Image 1: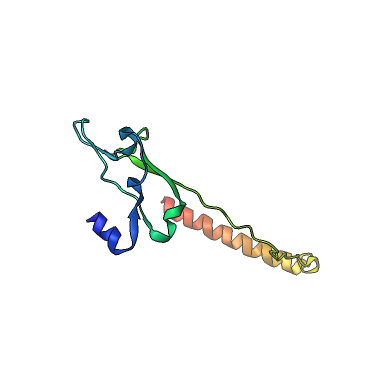
Image 2: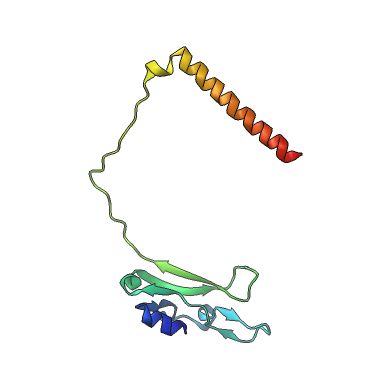
Length: 125
């Protein structure tokens, strides 16, 4: 079913493309710890398949599951951005230094802090 889904959506199972030791290809271990199968796969679209460098399973991590994590190495170059305009903002110092604005800001700040304290008091009860 997974293979049919991948084919119908122009995708590839990249976890089967790379040669590794059996210990690095299995993604599931049976409850008796004897059988290891590759049942988890990574799918990627046809356009992105050239970005996949390697796929393998990682056995050492404990994620409380009988499945192993899959590590996918991607190689992709980032395109540098040239001539990028960075917009800077300057504070208007005259407005900041006005006593009325400062007092209004402080009152708003005090009221917001008081609302927060009241909400935390209600939640603690």
